[in-house]
Each structure stands twice: as C-alpha cells, then as structure tokens.
Length: 309
Image (cartoon, rainbow, N blue to C red):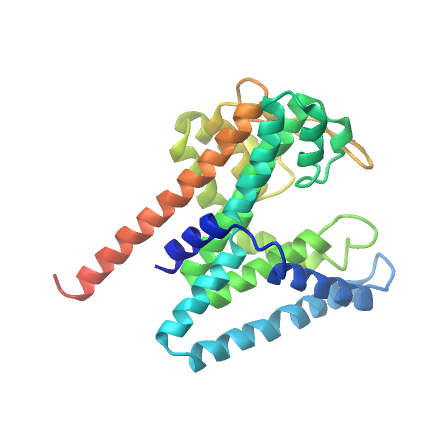
C-alpha cells in the first residue's frame, strides 16, 4: 500500500519545486564536508573523517525515524511512510528530464537537447552530437532508474523507513563525495563503498527487470559478457542489460571536463536516438508496475497463508 500510494503521489505531484528534503540534506553535507575535509589527499585520517562525516549526517535522522516509529500510531506512521517514500522516489522527475531531451531531439533542436542533457549528466554536453546526447540521456535514464527508483523501493520493502532513508542518504553522499579526484579520493571513499554495497542487489534486480521487459536473450548476453568490463560494479549490469533490452548500442567515448573518456561499448544494435530515450523511460515505468504487481501478489499470498486459507 505504501509503495503504491507513493508512486501515485509521485505521478500526480512530481518532485517538490521548493523545500525538497534531499536538497536540504545536500546542503548540510556540503557544510560537513567543508569542515572535515581539510587534510592532504593521501591520508588514512581523511578516510576516517569521511566516515565520521557520513555518520554525523546519517545517524541522527535514523534515530529520529526510529523514535517516530514508536511514537506514532499506525495510521500516522503509514502516512509518514508514504510521504517519505514519495520524497525519495523521482520517477516523474526522471521522466520529465528524459522527455525534455527526447522532445528536443525529435524536433531537431540539438542546442536545446544539449542544454537539457547537461542538467542530468556530468559529461561536457557542448561537445555532444545528436547521437552523443541520446546516448547520455539513455544511460542516465537506465542508471537513475536503478539508483533513484528501484533501489528505493527495494530498501523500503526490505527494511522499511530506516532502510530507504539510509540508502537515499548514502546515495546522495556518494553523488557528492564519491569522485576519484584529489579532493574526494580518500574523504569520499567510505560513502562510495557503502553505496556500492547497498546498490549491489537492487542493481541486479533492476538489470533482471530490464531484461524481462525487453529483448531478454540479448539483454542477458550483454549483461553476462559486457558488464564486467564497466568500471562500476553496479552500473555495468544495469546499463548492459538495459542496452540489450532496448537492442541499442551505448557506452563508447564520451567527453568530460578532463578529456575524452574511452568506455566499453554496451549492448548491440543501432546507435542511440530520441526513440531510445523514450524506450528507456518505458522500461523504468513498466518495471515499476511489475514490481508493484509482484509485491501485491506476495502480500495477498501472505495474507491468505496467515489466515490459514
């Protein structure tokens, strides 16, 4: 019930334009990082301070959540769960970002497409051609579908409110501190490793979801053969299976601020296009309804089993 209501609320309202809790958490994380991350790059103490920073940010909110669980009655806690899961999900927001890119590509407005894709990826959007824009947007839809949608649903179903909050906070810290550069290589290491651990199972369930809803045989082959070559242990299976499910080629060279990054090719088939971005969004939405359907069936089966029917 909580997952269904949260998805309906997200589809109806979308992301809050103001006062989003994750934005506030991000600002607090910035303050903590500036205060603690003042040691040389290669420092074991920097790793310890990164762990301390994550603990200071995460632990108080988890304690408050646990107190609310004991302090609120059943219906109020149910409402709280729906609201929190709504805040951590971003299905409509992901859809709006993806469609802004695909609509611009469909209309032939490459400049606008570059502007829109630059809002959701870290690569140098000004240097992307039409295929590069479509590739970047498709990869973002597939990967963010795993991180921001399916992983959130997974951790709520596994560990309730503390689980989904812990995952979302760790994922946000990884997005802010998990860079492999001079400033964050050691300070952000704990956040990056925690994010890898928490996303390991959800990423593979997401890859399986994409495979089941698309070209299953090709998705499975790409997942098995191509994913190990990707530098991320979780993004590799998700994007390889997603590319295979869409029967499209992703990956390859991509421009970043520090130069061209040569990446393995994922998937098989033609190059990405505006239709590919739309196809990735359909995979995410179909996957959400598939997960909700499976959860509903399990809930019904558990109810009848508990009732002795």
